Amino acid sequence: MGIRPLDGVRVLELGNYIAAPTAARILGDFGAEVIKVERPGAGDELRNWRLYGGTTSMLYRTVNRNKKSITLDLRTEAGRRTVLALVRESDVLLENFRPGMLEKWGLGPEVLNEANSELVVTRISAYGQTGPRAARPGFAAVAEAVGGLRELVGDPDRPPVRVGVSIGDSIAGIYAAFGTVMALFQRERKGAVPLEQRIIDVALNEAILSVMESLVPDYLAYGINRQRVGGRMEGIAPSNAYPCADGTSIIIGGNGDAIFQRYMTVIDRPDLAADPELQDNAGRWRHRERLDAAIGEWTVQRSRPEALAVLEEAGIPCGPIYTAADIVADEQYLARDMIQHFPVDVGEPEPRQVGFPGIVPVIGGKSLPIRNVGPDLGEHTHEVLTALGLTPAEIAEAAGPLG
Image (tube, rainbow, N blue to C red; front, side):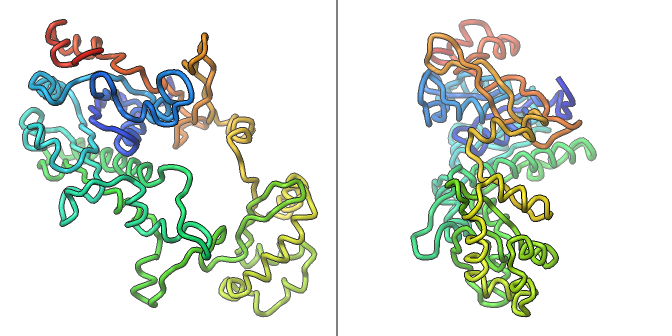
């Protein structure tokens, strides 16, 4: 099964949607046993998002790979009692409810700590567990706006747009996984760790803010409010998407000083290479429209493979804009096992072999193998709760219908 650094770690996930499940998925990818607790009957709402066939979406199967699914009704005393029993045998509890919800159910950090004084409690919410906005609900779309990202995405003459994935949730999930591993590492090194140091508090808006580079310092130092610049990156040129003769586009990043000289030679524009105004990035940014026009005139006369071949030969950073079809056929992804196939129900008479993205980061040269894609609702309820010592009657009481 490959190298699994988190073998022996047990994670209890009380998460829905994308943020906390992403964090638990990362921990599961590297060997942790992840027990995902879902609502009886409906389960995680992600099961129905982008559902084109079958009963469980590929989005759910992807985000919840390498996990076990059990159902528990947290509104009941039996469900809460079972959670605490699982907590006693777990290393981590992950959740992304609105702040105060766990406390309302009688499962706040202090109660969890009484059940397990070594438990790491990782909490993801819209604005964090403290501060004047803590109690507000919020999805990643709002966090991306409040965190500063949305204002920078899109063309300057149009309203802001959103990137095509739930990037705010995913970034928060990565931070939550990192914070969890930090807490486990601290516990391993120091032994007893106070509860407040075992609570990892991830806010969606802060996760976005943390990847906004110098957005805030540029404003406070220079009074600069960055604006949307379409396919470009503020202050960096030439770097953009350029059309090719076959109707595709390619990305070319020619903004390094030495690279720029080779770049202009390749596109037969020695005049631009020699222009004193274009010898540093600041000058090239001022003349970005002129540069992009010249580059576009060159690319539009060549097919995508032709343009890329010439640019790659000259050592110019460039690449195609891939669709899913391109990704699953790409030799680089395939060489590192970044597409792994599993038989999955897609609503047809027989399961279909479906490829799923591999595990990142790579250890040992290739992706670690995915153990299982996201499980069916409650698939492991009896396995997990029987091992906990519950009787069939107790399992039925705690798990609710279809448990």
